[in-house]
Structure formats: structure tokens, C-alpha cells
Length: 230
Image (cartoon, rainbow, N blue to C red; front, side):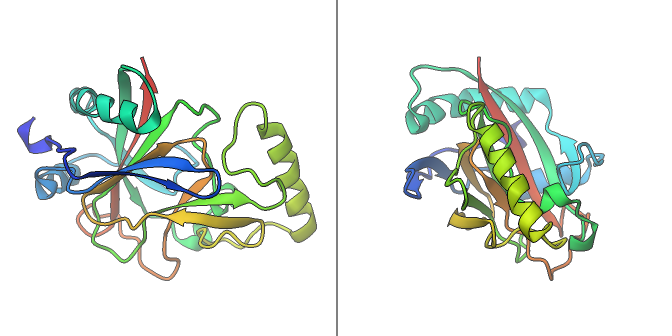
């Protein structure tokens, strides 16, 4: 497993928007990024869920356990938990869908769920000109994060938005207009990971005019992960 080893030494913790959301950023996370990309190229990618606009292959459970053990104390420090252990699920992911192939739900910012205790990670492993991850505020409600309590209000408000203006064009989210505004964007530098609460409205920054090859060596390859407290 040495080829999949990580380092958390090059780490920063920051905040964004008026809501003061926390994120943790780790640069140079993989000790051998090229080895991991080679490993990704040997995986069997497939379309797993309708929400993700591309292909995925699971990261093995042994690596997930190893990373979770190493990352747990840093997640606790960054997000304000005391001595919590975390379980991790992760996938190699490649965005492949052309803008005109997107379904409506893929043209809005999204959340990974309404649980504020579920954390997400994006580890960028591409050298394309596509961007990182952007975070958004819903204009009519002011919501930036969705919870079990506020989700019904958000859903109804977004439906009213769409009833008034129609569905957005089949394109990847950029600035979020007209119903959302972007509050922050990560750079998406090679071998950089960003960790954030998955219930914050967000979207990958995909350039609509650039190609989206399915090859892990040339496409927008990331490792996406979710963390839950044990």
C-alpha cells in the first residue's frame, strides 16, 4: 500500500462566506500522485449513479481505512470534533458528460445530503484547465447549507424559481446565475485535496467548452470521498 500513501503535513484551514464555513485544504497529499494515476488507469470505471456526470471506480476498502485513520485527528481539529473516528468511502471519478448530455439536476448546485456531520473530500488529480469546486448561496432563501429542517423550504423555493424562469440550459454550473451566487471557489491544483461539509451547496467547476475525455491520464480525474463518524 506504500504507493497509495498520503501526507497531511502541507495543510491549511480556512473559512468562507458570511456563514464562516470551514474547509481544510491539503496540498501534495499523495506521496506518489503519478503512481496513483497509473493505479486509476487499471480500474474498471462505470456510471454508478445518475447524479454524477461521469464514470467512477471504487477505491479499495483497505486504502480507505488507512487514509481515514491518518486523517481523523486532522478532521477533528478542523471541524471541531473531539476524538472522533471516521469511516471513509471513496471513488476514482472522471467527469465525462458533455454539457448537452446533462440532466436538469446536474445543472444546479447540489449537496451530498442534509447531515452536517458528513464530510466530503475532493482530491484533484488532473492537469486539465477545468477548475476545482465552487460553493453557492441560493438567492431567494439565502441558504448555503441544507438541513433536514430547511430542505422542504428550499425545495419549494427552487421549484418556484424554475416555474418563473424555466429550467437552466444544459450546461455545467459556473457563477450560479440567476438563482444562485457563488461564495467561494477552490483552485483545484494538482494533488490538492479540499475537505468540507457535504450539506453545503456546491458544484465542480467544469469548463463547458473543454473536452472531457474518459482516460484517467488525460481527463478530469479526482478522488471523491465521504466521511462519517463512527
